[in-house]
Image (cartoon, rainbow, N blue to C red; front, side, top):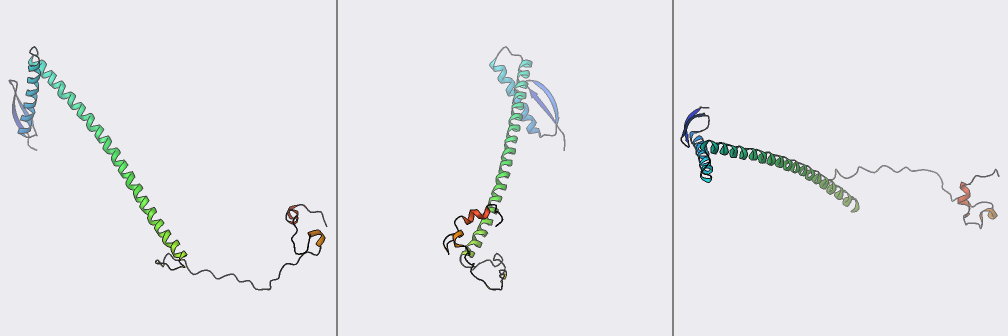
Length: 171
């Protein structure tokens, strides 16, 4: 970039500045410094030009430090907001996925309740497994031969359940 040579006159002091900034920008800075020095000198007649320049420099330095601190604070807040936004976006995405999963589950359950008519054939289970058929004859268990021990015939022994778990003496 081109360096510009700019001649400034601040409170009667001439100086030449070389800057990459535009001439208008540098002249506006010079005018701001001159106004600050004149304001300080107008408020107190006993202040010299040198002391007013020092006070103006202190004011500008103070404003600069406060501006940097404010900018750092804003950057920190923006970073926190971006992290919160990112976290919220992830939570929203996770919630959407959970909603979609639950919708599919509801569809599947509704299809089961309605008798298997499913709009989604992929969600329908495969053919049921063939039942395990046992062959043979079935008979009703017989009542015990000792009615006195078990009580009345046809009635199960009330003590039989607990006696089942008790240690038996050899009969």
